[in-house]
Image (cartoon, rainbow, N blue to C red; front, side, top):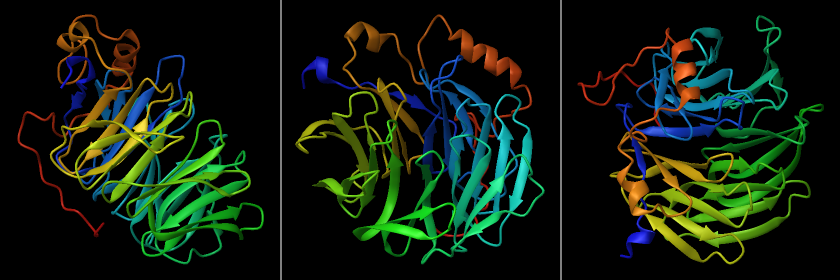
Length: 352
């Protein structure tokens, strides 16, 4: 293979179980950040550019299925098989709120204005928590037709998106009325749903298909058959001219958005790829796998000199000052496993 086309990822160790969700923050004055959810019960925060570990949020007692950051990357949220959704201080690692559910929480999402937290899971109920009044009971949106797999906000927090683990389709809910206003029909259950950074598209994966929907008129824009069953896809945010997809074959595929032609394929994971996400500037993308690692891939090929300068978690030499500053503020966070020691196996509640 041509050396120029050889992708050399940053390999981020630390999780002791499969990585099942990834989320990038928007670009903040301190850079951008990446949070990961894993079945090892410990969400991890990293520098989004270098992959350097910043901290681990300790407190869940079951697999963590979903994670997210607010717009300023000051708070994190996670949904777990321990029947809770937790909100964390992303600077100190402290647990701010723990919202009890009656079953596994599979999905969570901060509203655009960061005042609300949306959750969903096995209970088939969408709940909206007011973070300004965390002790108040949550608002419950009309019952979902199936166990909730993914949730997201769109239209300036006026609309909620949700998909189910056991039935196909994506439902769009009007927040005011709590009713479904549109269903995006799919043959299989939707395993990943992403609203594009500019709010134009909804990217979904179901079975071996990646679909792009008009986020305002809900029409199907593109539908592409993938080379294998895929679990996750993400649209490049800056130009919108390509997308990535990952799934059962353990590879991260890159496709042309307009034609569906495969323009790249990154190999390296040793298990199915459960989640892929583009960084907010589109210069890199991350993949999380059954093998317990996160890999960060550059959008463009590295030069041999750049490749030689990178090791498993980031560049050698000058450390990112912002990451150091954040790390100093996060003294309360402790690593459960740094990838070198023996991982502590934690009991998992519930099935995928």
